[in-house]
Length: 571
Image (tube, rainbow, N blue to C red; front, side, top):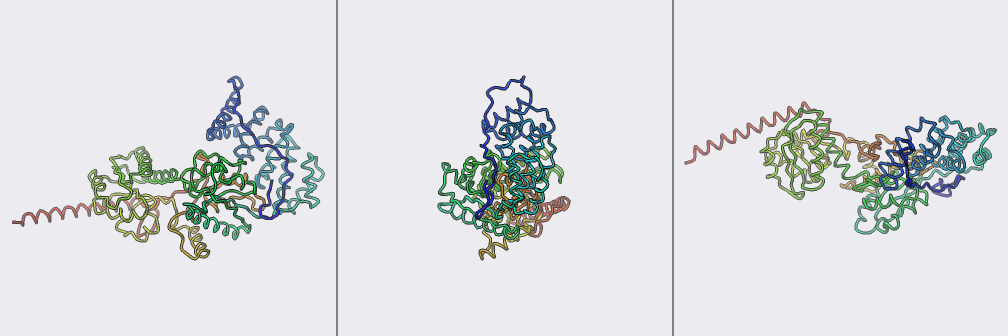
């Protein structure tokens, strides 16, 4: 496997073992036992394309069999194959070490091939695992020494190799130890190749250019912070198709650590399917969907997850902070508006809030008088307000005040946190609005660093859209999860991302969610106050609402009295 990525590099002398192939069992009788039945179910699910079910079952078996030495060797080998096809090579090694009866024939070569896919940290962890097979443990230790040497830690590798100089080892492992001790191992040059699939021509070329500028900025930032050179290998998404796998096999052949792109959901799905190695990590900056793509292919801007996350965050805050009350919604008449409102309604009703109605407006509207007045007639206490972009917030917010919903507690979507809104919207129309910040630009030092680097590199302000920032975040997210910059192993990079928690980058804080197996953002519920985002104060919000509604009632009373006076005085 090629591990020296920019320049000459260094080729590992690992055994060549074919990729695992999963087939559905011809027949599995219940009498074969629950383990065999469950394993067959996982294999069948994988072959049928239900990878979520296959992964869930194999994870359960992996956890259970890690404490049961009596599991038959043939079942363990089949589980190892299932772990291999999703690049869970560290778990596969653990199963083989714990069940040494599996290690006969070609399986010792398979063990070495698996070890050749692990990071230095993963190899170190395997050396501490108990095993009854001294030869297998020798393979693990030899693989760790080899990896240290390739990563540039020749001194550490030689020190460990000296401890095994007289040990009884299999011939391939002995050869590695001898090569390290004799100085015949050339360290990799520490460079990183990052694949990039973006449109450089065609109708989306301008989007691709902004995303690419963000990726380039991320590479420069990583080079500065980590001291490891990054080479971008760029493929024009517009010139590729499903037939070419959007260039993914070509990037894999060049030993990329992972891939940023493509930008479209359909292209991302095709790229994920085209991978020739299960551990190739793909992160799309902008794809609207990333479900059913198999392991290690993600979007950091998937629309449905974004919409759901914001609605759930607002509903959860409401249910935990305020007493149940009469609730309505104002939302655009589009798929996103209906979806968010549905998620919000379901959760607040579960929390005991009374849902009394909603109104949808056309997304290109400039006046909302009718919809707001109809909601006002329902006399709500709480209103969910979903705008369709920051420009619409500036149109919508004053009308809530003028057409009757003044003083109602308003939960609003993330468009209300856009810098333009914070800068231009009068506090009369924005104070005490509760919002969820999916795209965290304010009070985020990483956004400030990104904006400063952007200005320095390109001599212009950051684009108002999110494309450049999302390219930056996708690139930096991938680069920062590389466990060993001096020895890049693609599967180890993909696995490292699944252990990522609370990585703050320009547009927010990212974590891998082990339940959904997706890259998710942390959502913060905030309150608008004096054109700033602050932590919400439920007591202050309720107090403001009561006072504002009292003022509104007094205004209505005075207007009614004035109208009555005019009528009496008129001839």
